[in-house]
Length: 107
Image (cartoon, rainbow, N blue to C red; front, side):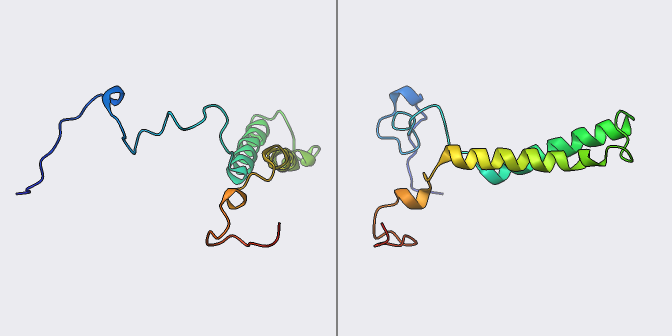
């Protein structure tokens, strides 16, 4: 048996100083986008779309083989756009000087 005494669960509104409840400190709205996930997700959906068009005989690859490259081009363009919109707001840039992994003196 354990000698720990457990406190009954309280509603979130009644909790004070709860380390899990950081919702009041977090800004709502936009969040960082993982560009790799975005690119691969768009490429996958595009390839599924092309596959559906080919299997339903809407597009014939002998005449329209260039359609296979479109998902990669669209995914790459969205990845570049997401990188530009996100900007240099990387975690390493917001780390305080002296943090391991951050190069200091290059600013």
